[in-house]
Length: 225
Image 1: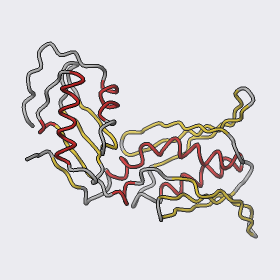
Image 2 (image 1 turned 60 degrees about the horizontal axis):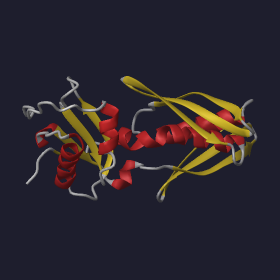
Image 3 (image 1 turned 45 degrees about the horizontal axis):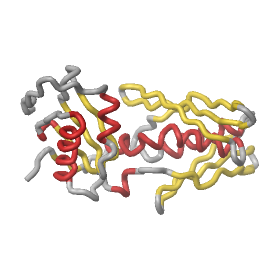
């Protein structure tokens, strides 16, 4: 690891603020910063689109840190991973939520779309169609991961604020460290449809990063011309 460049008298904001600023750079999907001291950045890990040159993205990161925070960083402290757009699942959308009547009961089937690909799953309705829709959405999302089912549904809640009904989904992602996520959406059609959308609201911002971490064919770079 490269030695840090001295940055005397530089006052950096909190980590989340810096990460948010770096996400505005074209081609950057997600950022994680490691820092041991409040005034220094030890490592910057970047998930990026392959549509831009990694060297340009690294240079943009250097420039943003210099212009916004008067902070100089050695490019070797920036680790960049590029993921094929077809694998990234940047924004899954809800295709349909449908009640399926079978001889053994009623099921809720949810279909998710990512470009030309679709992922479907169904769950028995039981006593709660919204909960079944949320569980089916989780099952469909888990089908994007190979050999593991890291997403879990902790629960859903139907509430009213003012005169509007809202569904909230509480989801966890378990892979060593547990991530806790919440997603909410207004009920515009059916409550089961809103439950499926609430799960997507909780997970969509992180799906690309989760999938990228499990792809063996990722391209990494910390070099430039």
